[in-house]
Length: 521
Image 1 (cartoon, rainbow, N blue to C red):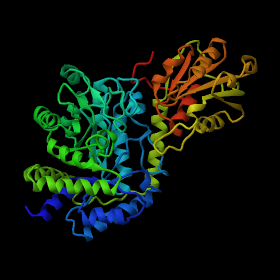
Image 2: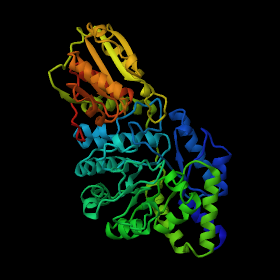
Image 3: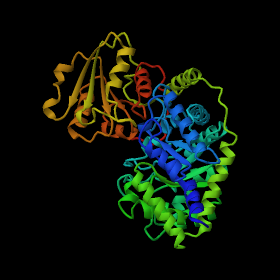
Image 4: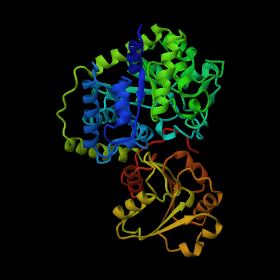
């Protein structure tokens, strides 16, 4: 095999990203010089739906003009909810845990179908979704509400429906993070987590959603940068383990589709063996796509490391060709002929808005209503006190710009004649006196990963004092366990304007039909 042939095949297996909202020198170097055939987009690449459409068109034109024989795979993480890359003017859809709270798996199919419509309009042909992790660890810092819940059967059922909705609508689906990132207390973006459960446990909890996805014909499975000691005893993360990816996933689970790594620039890889060596080891382990999302120097170093490994015989030519052929077949099945779009952005926006309204109403969950405070009367809600722990006054979604303002916006829409007072609690001195709250008709205590004992104790004391307190979990429903003294507790699963609005509506008996997909005491 010549070096040009080796490099052409390497371009087939690299997934790379770049900064910018137009084709720039970085993108040109990837596609033209390095023959990269798979591009990942992030928020940094997005201004609007039409801009993304122009960008993907330009990327495909560049590939065609530089001699690529097939369309690029262009992917993004459009999980919905708190992980949403595109596009700001399209009404957002709830994420996995909110969809699971509707307890209707057909909603997951509908979300997959609608997500595919949006992505196809913008020229994106692969969605790095759904998350198939079973979130049974309340301390999980990275999965949480991105999961469909704690029940493997429910996660499998909703996940398969999402996959079917995406793939039936012409978008490649990617289930993640195999063999499961749900029971970790460490974020693999930051460090290397380990799951030490025995195989009997993995086969009953972590693995069933992936097994069902394989049965359903999922296109792509993404690996986890997590050590699974019962499968791979050498303390190697799944991404780099031939035992996990080849012997177990392909051998025991009979998976024949494409395997992609999670981003190799995450600290679990980049701060241990490094990105270039990680790319070589992942390819040897059985990965077909090697994701390097950000830096050109790391992307080029990985490409050169693979070239050298093939030349030296460390990576057999057959392994590289096998991976490239698998990706090429996926490209041929899903991307040829190119889909001709008849959608308009206006029709997509209208359908997304209708679906958003329906799903949010069905998802917002009244977790408890001890004492019968709910539903409240809009006419009698004259003075609302909103309490927020000051450490989380800028609760973030995927773009890190949103604050607790969403709660205030929803209140001003739903009870426009009410006076609203906002209290940011830092310490005991910032807590207002009980006597200053005697006239309040509603106290809303916002929760989002709050660890401040002063704030949590104060919220519980407000309830014990007989004030009309509602605890509003703005992301993880597990946060409600810290305010057990509060009788009225509501979960909205994600700090997005549409789900916060649904939670406020639930206070007044409008919606709030969801059921918890996880156990909250």
